[in-house]
Length: 262
Image (cartoon, rainbow, N blue to C red):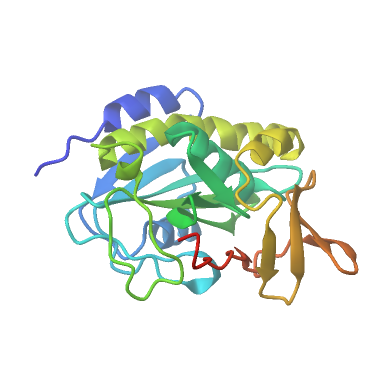
C-alpha cells in the first residue's frame, strides 16, 4: 500500500508561520528526534517536520524504546518537529504539546501527565521533547509517535490503544495533517504566552485528576491537576506536593476488579 502524504499542504499551511520551514519524509531512520538533534548540532537549525515510515531506534521518555511498526507507516505514525524556540519559561511545554495533539484528534483522548496520550487506561501516543544550543539559539525537537492500529502488548509496561478504535480508517497521512498545523500554532503560542493560560483546557483532558496516583519518587496520593507552570499537584498524607521533574514517572492506581463487577 502506497501512502499519499500531504507534505505540500502542510508546508503551505505552516510556512507563513515558520519562514524556511520544510517537510521531509523518509522510508526509514534510527530516530527522527536523533536525526534532527544531529542536524541542529551540525549547524542546521531550520524549522522542519521530519516523518519516518519506520524507526529502528525510536525513543520515548526516560530512555524507553518506542517500537515503530515494520509495515511502512501503516500501523504507527512517527515524526518530529524541529524549530528554534525562545520562550521566557520552558516549564509546561510538554503539556502544551500533548494538549494540542489530543485536541486535534478526538474528544475521547486524555492526557496522562506530563504528555502521554491515553484512551481509557491504555497508551495511544507518546511525546519526547529535546533541546540543544545552536550558537545563541535554543533548538527544540518535538517527537511524537501515534499507534494507528492495534498492536501486541508484549514487553510494554502499559497496554497499547489505537487511534482506529475511535477513528476507524485513520491512517498516517491524515493523522499527520490533523496534528501538524495546530501543533505549530500551539508551540508558537506557548513561546509567546507560556503554559498558564492552558490550565483549564488541560484540566478537561486530564486523565489523572481525582485519581490515586503512584510516582517513582515515592510520592502517592490524589492527583489534583496542574499549576501554572505545568507541575502536577498531588494531595498526599503530608499535604499538597508538586511533581515537576521530567525524570519522575506517574501512574494511576487502578482499582481492583471486584468478583461481582467484572
